[in-house]
Image (cartoon, rainbow, N blue to C red; front, side, top):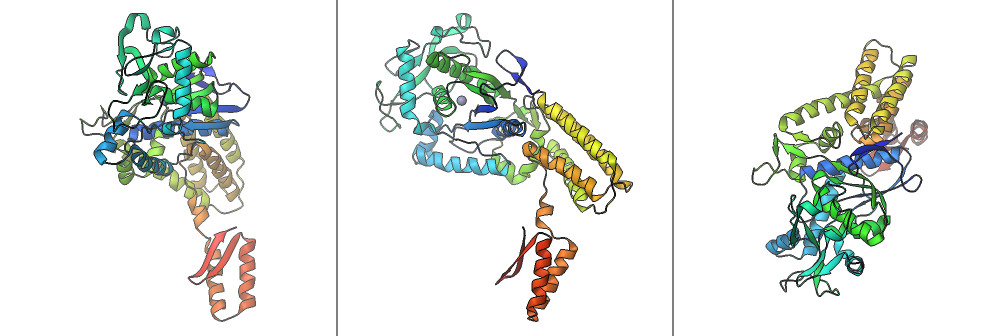
Length: 464
Ligand SMILES: [Zn+2]
């Protein structure tokens, strides 16, 4: 039974989606004013593993990650670079996708952009106003948090005691201030991007986009909503207030999952400390797969202490896994060791049990590590045959569906010695124009699953 820790209610619960095996999953995406930092990379890898584990477990996931392409920071940065917010967004979205790809993150099903949902946002805000949850002022439309009696249920904030009586107009939110927030902001400068609305030209606030785009792409109630832990308040609290007020349906989200912080060299990452690492910087210095391996070794809620020393250790451990996989792929021989299957089965069971327990990756890796040691011992004592090696490799390939860290390329890229010799022989025969003999070799290779193409650059081969 799969259990997840739900921030709403603060306990582990059995995971049961609202509609059978279908899972609607939404994770707050980036504001695309610049490259993401490694804290973002951690969040997206953590939720990638969770999403893929749902799929591994037989669920059908629809995964949505929003792209915030209108925001105070977008406007500021576009102005600095003398380009439009759209040009700025396009540039950084392309970079974001490239980073995700490098980090082995599977594409979401939808990446909705805020500027493509303005009409729906206006409709949503209108509905909140009609229902009495929002009020218009000179500078925009605000959500009245005192009208939503469940306000605070996710974060534990007490509105009556903590409400400041102020409003927040910008897209910067103070973590300790409980206040009404902007749903729609009127245009202040003529050069600010703005759209028509019943309240005059303006643009949406930050929180409203997630309520609007999640309901459009996943319906009014979601199974999973994820994000980094610092989004619990006020962003996710405000999403609940907007969505439940609008739909009248509870809960907006069945399971709230939050990933932990990432520190750099023991300190909170910040531009002022000079320890701010953007994803492209990380990828220049480190293997993307190693960073993913680092993240996959820790529980998604735990804090990650990123440091050069920690990465060195990760590199060494990953190298051991690579050597282990290569070793398994090189094993030949008919020997049958009945213990191998038992070991593979019990390891699989342990990994699944760990993952079913709120994605407890450290326990999953402990089981895998134990198997690696045991298998290496058996290979050392000559007890392992090709069939046994295949059993272990098949398990790693299966688990790689969600771990995404093992590399099996050698198998796909390399020929056996015999096959290479056949190709060389065939090339000699072709030079000597011995076509029928060369065709025989082609047939023989095809039988072994190797296809030959004769090109102007010489003979090329590929796996069937
Ligand atoms: Zn969001």
